[in-house]
Length: 329
Image (cartoon, rainbow, N blue to C red):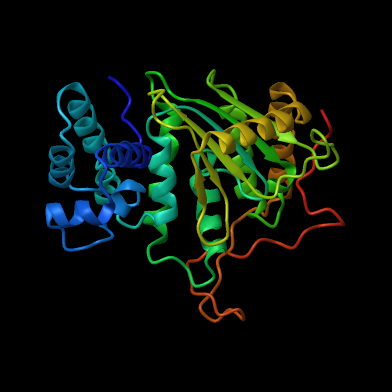
């Protein structure tokens, strides 16, 4: 069965094609809005910028106005249908945050995903336990439905385990992503064991980046980023750059080339996949050995005021270095 297309990428591709057709017809956005009779003057801009899930009827109105017929019309109608398919995620996982939904939409239809992670592991390779702690840690007030968000993130990870033609996945992970500040030792141990097993998959390549290595021409990445390339070569490659409030999506050719070059530098500086896999195994044993024998839960009367049933806070780091340490491979 062919892999589904990425809805967000299809929206941007559709918007670019519609803008090209409008300009070819010699029409301004305001003229289009007036001729079709839309109430909102910004509607055409939202469609052309890929920010809006356009109704198929609106797309047909635009194609009629531009005189688009034949194979091109059929192709754009098919793209418009793909662009609206993200509603399945919304129905299945209504608690999925806009940021997580954005990543889920990008991941669908990918032929290759490359990710560089600084402090937090990418969602596609997180265990439910790790995801639970990161969701809690990312929002001091707590999510509305923690387990629903964890389930939504777990659903995304299934992409790497499909039987037929899974995407090629490569990640470069900073050692700081395995700090004891991220999650308790038992959770980190589970996560490390998961990565050790994941590295056995033929389409998955994981590399660890040690803090002391020099990357490229003294390159220091400002933040984590992901690079998505798609099954359909006409779908534009996209870079997602992590930001505090809202991640930035870049699909212009120059940005894609820059981030591919940066990823190449990081790959050259990182440990080999085999050495990384061995590091995961040794670090998992170290984390497991340092974990308490039984997990603890905060009580309703705990000094920090957290409610019962939420995971206890991670233990304080031991010694001067808070990373889970393993012998250098």
